[in-house]
Image (tube, rainbow, N blue to C red):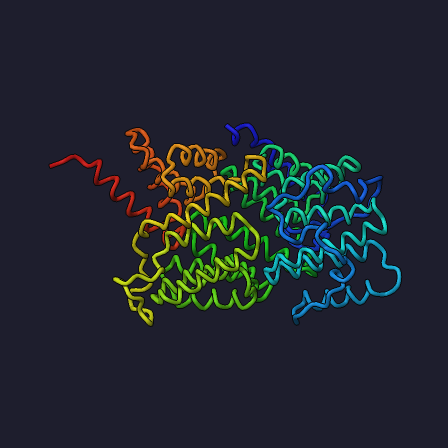
Length: 515
C-alpha cells in the first residue's frame, strides 16, 4: 500500500531529466551524501542557536559527540589531527585559518565539515564531537547562521539522534523553506523514523530546489527502496553526471551506490565494474574495496576477498563493519580461529561506536556464525582447497546474544518513536525470529517488505519466518519467497544464502508427495 501511495512522491524520470538539463550547476558537495550537503548563506532569519535540541533532547541513541557534551568547544574544534591523509591536510589548513584572530562563522562551518570528512575516512564517530564544537563556535558568533544550524543538524543525524535532527531541520525550514540542505537532512531523518512518504516529499523538494548529486542520489535511493530498480539506475546516472571533478569522493560514493543496485540484482560482474570505477575516481576508497571483497566472497574467491578486506581495513582500522567483513573472508578461507577472533574484535569496536543497530546486527551474525571455536570441529591453520565453497547453514545461535540484540533494537525503536527504516525493521524481524517470537517477527517482516524493496535478504528472512508459522498458506508463500531470494541474488550473503538454499530444499522435500 505504501509503495502504491507514494510512487509519485519520488521524482518521475521525465521531470528529473528536465530539471537536470535546466538546472545542474556542477556545485560540489562539502561532504558525502547523506553525511553532508553543501550549505548556503542565510537569506532570511533562522532559528536561534538555543533552538536545536530544545524540542527534542538527545536520546540514548546519541553518541558522546552530541553538541552539549563538549566542555571546551574551541579546544575540540582546533584539535590537531593525527594522520597524513588528504582529510588531515585539509583539517590542518582550516585549523590554522580558524586560529587567527576573530574567526567568522563560515570558517567554523568549513572546519566542522572537514571534521566530518575525517570521521568518515577514519570510521571514527567520536570525531563528530569535533564537528559539533565547530558548529557551537559558529553559532556563538551568529545564533541565526543557517549553515552552522545545518551542520549541527547533520551531527545529530550522524549520531543517530534522528528525532532531534528532524526537529532542527524543520526549524531551519520554518525560517527558510528553500534551504536544500535542510530538506536533505529532513528526508534522511524521516526515512530513519519510518516516515517514507514524508521523506520522499522532502527529497522531491530538494530535487526541485537544487537538482545536484546529493538530491539525485537521494531520489535514486528512494526509487530503489520502492522497488523501481530501473528508475533508480537512471537517476543514479543523473547524480554521476552532476559531479564536480575537483571533488572526486562524492562521485566515488555515488558509483558505489549504483554498483550496489547491480549487486542486489545478482549481477556480480556489473557490481564489480562499478566498484572499480569508484576506485578509479578515488584510490583505495574503503566502500569500493568492501564491495569488491563481497563480490569476491560471492564468487568463492576467498584469497581475493581476504586481500581486499585487508586493504579496506588498512584505511579504516576501527570500522566494525570492515573488521567483520575481514572475519567473513578469513572464515571462507578456512582459518576459523582467526575469523572468530576478528569477529569478536568487530563486536568490541561496535560497542565503542555507540550505534545500537550496527551492534545488534553483528550480535545476530555472531550468534549464527560457524566461525566460533568448537571442540568437535578444530579450526584449520591454513585455507583448504575447498574453503571457498559456501558454508553449511549456521548452527542454532546463542540465546544471550540474540537477547542482547533484541534489547538494543527495542531501545532503538523506542528512541525513534516506535517506527524505524526498512533495514532496521528487517533486522528486528530477524532478531524476533531467532528468539522464537514468530508472530511478532512476521509483523515486522511485513513492515520491512511493505514498499516492495528488491533485496534478497528481506525475501529470505520473510521466507524463513513464514516457514516457522506452521500455517500451510504461509508455507506455500515461504517457498516462493525463498526461491525468489535465490533467483534475485543467489549469493546475497556469505552464510545466509546457503541457509536459504537449505531451507528451500527442506521445504520442498516436506511438500513432495510420498511414493
